[in-house]
Image (cartoon, rainbow over all chains, first blue to last red; front, side, top):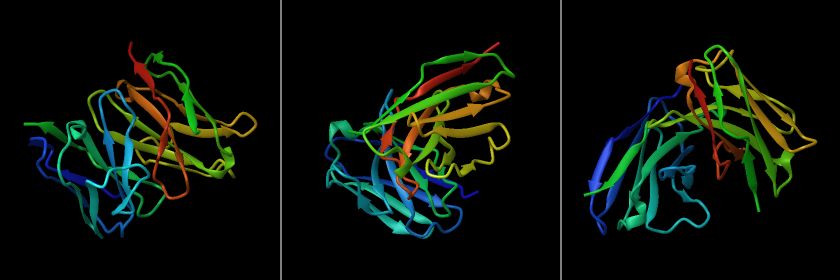
Length: 108
Length: 118
């Protein structure tokens, strides 16, 4: 099973700042990695798939990069609504799939 | 538009079984797979498995393999996830999601809370 490790566990930033979230895979998943945003009481929302492609309707301030085992989600300038939990998901050998443990992005 | 509507909350005793349904509308059911993801209280997302609505093929996570069965009823565009021999650590919100063949989930059900308690 491919294990995804996200860092940091919690990121404290202010609106307007740049956020950089990391996801590392235990083995190569090529570019088959997605990022989701989840707010309390809601289902996750797909932000980025195939490492760098924004899903429909996702603002341009969200970007993804990486391949192989190291991936990054960047939010260029934080908006108040961006404070949430972010998960990465791999589908490198789909199926199966796995999620990372999440990064909580909180307001400083 | 795409809708996935799940069955209501359940309370079960340890050792019992639960079957959660996910009724799809707004698209051709057999053109997309269904993935199941769960989230224990205050915890992260856990991928449980996937079913092809086209031919019934399944793939389950190792952690639940042997206790889970995913099925579909194409006549009603409904997917089902049955989990047996429930334990307290199965307490979670269970989500279904429409999977377009690439493993990613754009459309999600509203979630079903399953509580396992003596």
